[in-house]
Length: 224
Ligand code: MD3
Ligand code: FE
Image 1 (cartoon, rainbow, N blue to C red):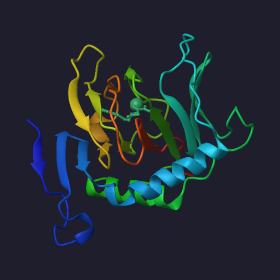
Image 2 (image 1 turned 45 degrees about the vertical axis):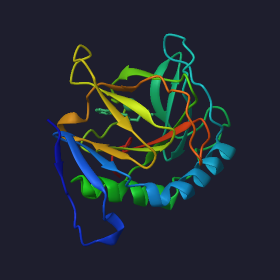
Image 3 (image 1 turned 30 degrees about the vertical axis):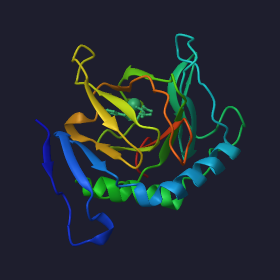
Image 4 (image 1 turned 135 degrees about the vertical axis):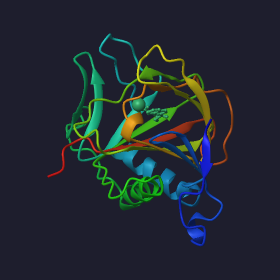
């Protein structure tokens, strides 16, 4: 059973009413945690996509991903016929990925702290855009060099269903609805769980129209 608890100081007005649900040890949903920053986050995403366009990457097996992706930060996640990896250079532009905005790093660190992970300093932010029909098949995030750091995921726009699996691909995933402004933090024992996103349904959000954006913050490189 999910444990519902207040993980932070209820006297702090910036977190008043935010609901924290621990899905399992090391995996926490902070409902509405990004709501106040959502409009600014979307403006920042537009600027990032101007410099490093959203694109449909290719899997190692040659499939075009239905999700469109870009990155900001010191390292960007890439997939192509040679596999998955992080690289400081965007192969589309030949330039470094755009810098990780202060607002992004600050929000990710605050969310991680509320979920029990102090001093999270992300160096990579994957930006995913889901149009209706897009999905992300079950996978693990294991290209990062630092598995001690958590991963922080921010949902914006149209709601989606996370597929929340276990330590092996055979574990039947739970379905967890994530909405505009929700943040999921996972680390510790849940860091290598299988997960995915179910096919996005046709829907409308005032700030994004028919699409969903997800920001995934990671520590991809080892600390200097
Ligand atoms: C991790 N993106 O880009 S994390 C990814 O909505 C990715 O675009 C998701 O997975 C997205 O690699 C955001 C979703 C998620 C859900 C359940 C998990 C990650 C999880 C359970 C355990 C560990
Ligand atoms: Fe993932």
